[in-house]
Image 1: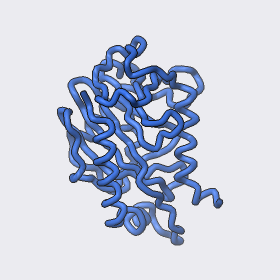
Image 2 (image 1 turned 90 degrees about the horizontal axis):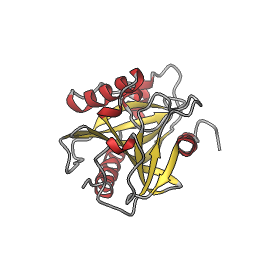
Image 3 (image 1 turned 120 degrees about the vertical axis):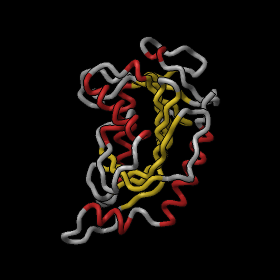
Amino acid sequence: MKPRVACLAFIAAVFLSTTARAAEETSPAEKPPAPLDAITAAPENRALKMHSVVNHDGDGIGEELPSSILYSEDDKDFATFMTVTDQRLCKRPSEKAICEAFLAMIAGPPPKLGTDVSGSRIGGSDYGTVFLVPLTSVTCAGVDAFTAFLGADSQDPPLSALVLYIYARKGTSLIQVSTSVASCNAPTKKGESDVAYYKRNCGSPANLEKAAARGKRAAEIFRLQ
């Protein structure tokens, strides 16, 4: 497998390895450890795997992120997951900047295609995310406000893993739902900008339709109490 074509698998592997180092699995029926007990939003589905994520272990990976609770269907497969934190946990400068960027994505107009929104993620580290297109057909019940969009995740742009993102706010809780959609790894053209590449290869009607379907399923899996 060519290194650049392996982008989707590599991003998944990066997320698995960094999460495994930072997360401690707990049962959704258990009370999360301090300071995560400040997080009040939780999914209805009690069968989901729950991980307490505290990114302060000194390895430098994910250190900028606020502490959070991660939910997934499978503790070995994070292709679809939900990260929940609380604005009260956004205390350090890096955490404040991330939480403010997250909220700005919800409250403000959509960024332009090709905008780097990596600094708005409250979950996932060691890779970049580029905004592609808003997905207005995706809904998210039980929250105060939300936005949904198709992003391009990569360590080697513009070749990317296409990911459906839902950013939501419920009270002081911040919720990020992410689910893999497809790969966008067509050969690049000489002199082509990243934005031109994304327009040409990533936002096809088929990919948008698939993203909307994945978003609907993810919203159902992680429906909040």
